[in-house]
Image 1 (cartoon, one colour):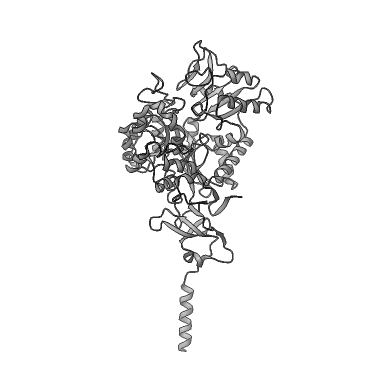
Image 2 (cartoon, rainbow, N blue to C red):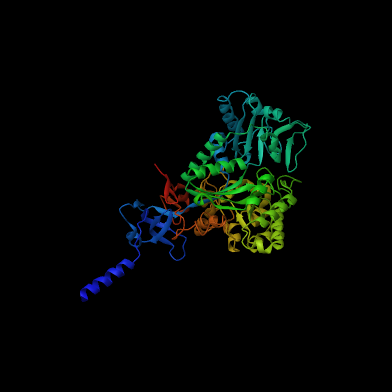
Length: 563
């Protein structure tokens, strides 16, 4: 009888022990950088239903290994929280893969040759569209430059029978040929639009260069792309992002037709990365619609969020469109452009904060940054209850007056800065700003971080290639991708490697209100990882650009694997 009681008690105790559920997937045998202060590194991760259930040594997760568990043997590779692209244009990435990609062109002649090659494959009269040229990155400048930019004449002579629209790498200017000028009815009598400039030569004739809002005079007459073309662009862009280890993407400005394609992909499990969409602030109808229904959060199993608005205060430094407090060092009397009236920005900011939307405003020049900070600050004061966790952002924050740098942390405004812009632009940006402004107010990463800001890193693709590793390298080296100069530009502003990793993971997640779900490798977060063949946290600086993405995992699914 006594033995029977003991056996019964043992049975009851065993039946009360929670049943250990088998993991769907286990990664083991590598180094895992968790960004969890209580456990900075690990060697194994267990995943169930797309979420992390345990992190640690393999012995810690071994009890979750079952007959149906898939196992990825890391074989000494390195796992990081999934890389977050903090500011880019996904349809632009796809467009560059379809249209004429001018990013690698080293001269105007090379630009023309690429356009001429496309013209040979295109029926006469059809538009040729390209992007990526940048005169400050050419090895040699053509004759007949006007105000620092090429003119259309040589392009028009080479390609006379197709209208051509070539967007500057920055996206803030364009070069068009004579056929396109005629199609848009741009003549010597065409006035400058608000926030833009139609470049005209000494005789008053248009040069073909359209700066800032003037580009819309041509872009708006280009035939609207079909939904099928949008699907193709999005699919190609997603594949490019996954190949680069990107698991989440901050989409910097979208119109209704693009959002419809994002939703279609999400409904059909084709989105594959987590999209955080900023509504274009230029479409008041779109804003009215979303203000009416409110922020859209966690759609399609956390693959789509629509809770932000993209505004534009100024243009780009390369096209001298960035709005400066003092004139350009290389252009007497020029201060850049305010491309969206500040009154209009203030109105959208007020409506956004009242309706629970985050505002993300493009500001590159020091005057643009100051004006936007002023508008934000007034809104926070006017709506204190609604601004407790606003996470408003300034996109780029490239050149800030020293007096305004502390205001980011004081106001809780997030600087969304693309480190690769420093690497790419710094060699010529000093001509635009001069040494004093470069050293004391441009690309001020370390100072912003030290004062309490969390930088959201990215590439601004297709302005730059959508490569987190290139931007990580720029963050920690302050060098060009060619490794110059020794010691880097303004080296006191370098990020540490941990800061650079956070800027591409945890801080990026914070910038999208997702830090409780992504950005670090801890239990109960989404299983989003980037796996590299080498350790970017410890290898020599010059080897970072040689690192390769071997696998990208989103929601516990291997969405990219190196062949």
